[in-house]
Image 1 (cartoon, helix red, strand yellow):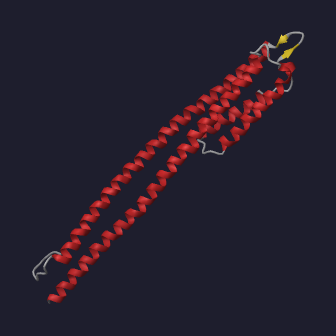
Image 2 (cartoon, helix red, strand yellow):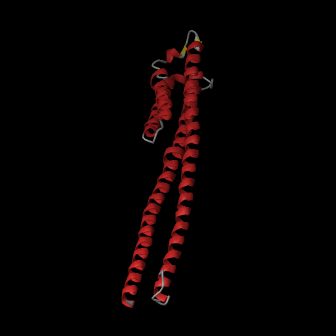
Image 3 (cartoon, helix red, strand yellow):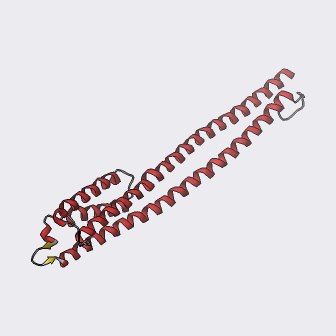
Length: 216
């Protein structure tokens, strides 16, 4: 009879310990996934937001140089090769845009980026210097104003893209904080399971066996 009770007691302890160990294993799997998500989140912040912001800054600088050339800001500058220089800046901008397109874009980002690309490839694709200047009439101010307007539109697209980086960055950081808080909760849960496991093992190993016991 005593052996039967001891056997039942061992079976109970085995079941409880097994359940607790399974819970720890499941928690470990969830914790691994959580850390993976956190790592992915911070990678996304860097690759798709911080790096992209540097793209936008670089594009803006080149766009400013194009506007200076179009507006003939420097009276001492040799404008004989201005079309080639503008084309070079535009090619550099489009290279950065290509890298930009390979990042994780939101639908709104894709819209602004496509509009910006269209301005560079079509509206600011100046074929002849005579569109900007002629010896007889000087600077073609009407046409320059048109190009300035297109550059202004391009800058608005860049501003909108920059604002999206801030918004998405905040969203991703909030997501990361949520994952970290969840991870902390799971860590507390693990400690609680370990304490219960220790108590169960202590009762099983050190508590004297009594025939009339109703618990482990």
